[in-house]
Length: 347
Image 1 (tube, rainbow, N blue to C red):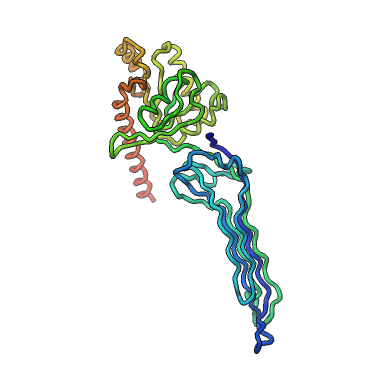
Image 2 (cartoon, rainbow, N blue to C red; image 1 turned 45 degrees about the vertical axis):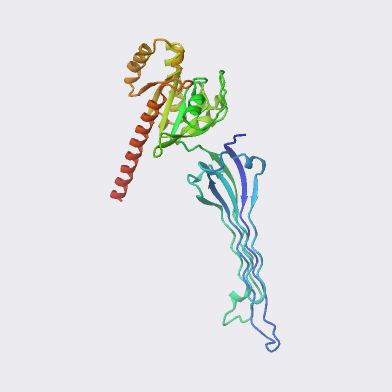
């Protein structure tokens, strides 16, 4: 089961209490204080893990508590530190405060860590309070309470390329052809009910990650057809491949194309600023391929969208498409590097 949004409660460990104790040795009947400090509590830590692809585990267990610090002891023995609780999440998990919706952290790398709830500090033992005016303090501190809060974890897939389009246009078939991903494929709408990721390797040195997003329908940005849950997974992509079924009527194709871009804009304006490649799919079912390609080229050239023809089922045109994808991704990456250099130079 694919789960991409959960709410959990986390509680860091409380600090242990400081100890009140005095030295009682054979030849030192009135020894000074020797109470040790309490141990610190454990942190709640969230860590990225490449091997995880869903937040399913958090759906069945929602409460997480780190270990408490042990109390201090006599002979200046400090209490043992409480054990950290490490929660592992998929790469691409966004962590928010569930009550305020404040963004706390974004896990984007393997082993990247965020302390979600900070430990309580152990209380000081009475040794700490000895002074010239108070040689025998008979008090110690309680440990500090560890932080606790409700968190919202939201998974947004980390992909370079997002495959978008209406239902049953061949997105899953294309992903299965260009990567090792094996999404469910069938000749009826809404076969894909969850996003799928696939690593596409063009050669030993060039590769990218593609995400197959379930078909979008009108009202998706409002949640219709689980649209919001799907649209958020293309927010991080650098490039969109917009698949079109060329067997459909021209008027319906243009209507659907405008509808999908309208949904992208309504959900997040930045999605429409991403480069798009138009892919005319299912050309194996068409006889006048050249005529159709010319018509589409004329329409989409005005919008600066490159057009490619493919048959995801047979594999026609896929290599040419992938070369264009790599070219655009490399250009975007180069521009991003130049922007970073410019910012560093300004600072």
